[in-house]
Amino acid sequence: MVQKRHLKTILFALVMAGALWSLGYELSIPVKSAHSAPLSASAGAETPMIPANFSELAAKVRPGVVNIQVVKKVKNMGFGFSQGNPFGDRNPFGDFFGPFSEGNPPRGYKQRGIGSGFVMSPEGYILTNNHVIEGADQIKVKFANGREYEGRIVGRDPKTDLAVVKIDGPKDLQALPLGNSDELKVGNWVVAVGSPFGLEQTVTAGIVSAKGRVIGSGPYDNFIQTDASINPGNSGGPLINMKGEVVGINTAIVADGQGIGFAIPINMAKEIVPQLEKKGHVIRGWLGVGIQEVTPELAKSLGLREEKGALVAQVFSGSPAEKAGIEPGDVIMEFDGKEIVDSKDLPHTVASTPVGKSVTVKVSRDGKVIERQVKLGEMEEKGVEVSQDTSSHKSLGMAVQNVTPEIARELGLKKEAGVVVARVEPGSPAADAGIQRGDVIQEVNRKPIKNAKDFVHQVEQAKKQESILLFIRRGQNSLFAAVTPK
Image (cartoon, rainbow, N blue to C red; front, side):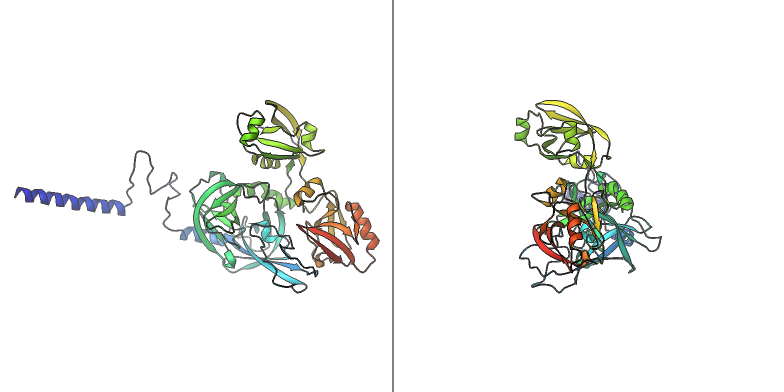
């Protein structure tokens, strides 16, 4: 009898323990350890470790997310290309508008593309990627409720791949709130909303995989990496945190990878969007140096204690850096009171500093730290609508500007001869001939040209002819274009 009582007691205890465990599981009673937080929640109460669902968040943000459809008119000039994209579209997805079909396309055909964006203000300002709308002749913006509006480009910035589009519609559009991308932590949940492959209002979820990624897309790379599914067509759409705030703009993917997408931090967009809305382009500070990373080997050779700073490899002639006495071999350690930990910190820091401001630059030279006073210049932007050295030609419907050393480096030109196309008027002879912003015109009627003045002179000499033959450099390709002056 004694043994049976003990057995019953043991069985009863086991049953009660199981019931308590079951009850604790259903109520999500946290299990703590000496070194860990509760598994049911993260450090912030508003951001659960494992969200129950994303339906409320998706319903909240969908009205502010748009589908962007673009049309680019392209005139086939009859020249064949064996490889690459002859239109020079540079975007993280390769040929955003799609590659050529086999053989030559029909003359005057249209290329179509699809992207995403989101409403920034009730007045109809929409943020998207520059590569979504660049070169577009027609832009249509479609909302979740099916409403469609014509869009126009207000401003764009190729260097950060951001653009602002304006629609004239209701003044009660739902603008998405902007968050703080600096507060994002690796492991935080995020949601991507957009139109992958044209499938509108698609919602995908994942986490922040990394921050500060450099993927070689431009001088200001500072991407958020996420495993939330991003595909072609998602470009320009918002990356949302669990509060329903935009923390990034979905921009790029790794073509051969899965679960590897990249978004531009919203804090970067906050810095330049006001300029895009007011001026159409971004004015950036310019120091005038070429820099490289400080490796362990270089740090040792330069007498540095740590692998910090930006090593000056080149100082451009006539630049603010040259005037201030900065030399090749200097290591920039501090700029305007801000420490330069890595070489990639310098371009963004300089660019965000007002033009004309005098700043103190600390450099390490021969093992000693010295100071230099620099008055920042203005960085010349390729494709800017208005420039002091831009020359327009009404008979062709385009504006050109001199090829500066900076433009030559950016375009990979061996010399600074020729002119770069800064603007092409829609429906103009230049547009009909397929000329695009960023093209470098090197010859007019087989005569080499040196600068904008030379270009205007040659065109004036030839404008009475039925057509003017231009020799153009576009990306890695060269081609001829015949323009008929009006």
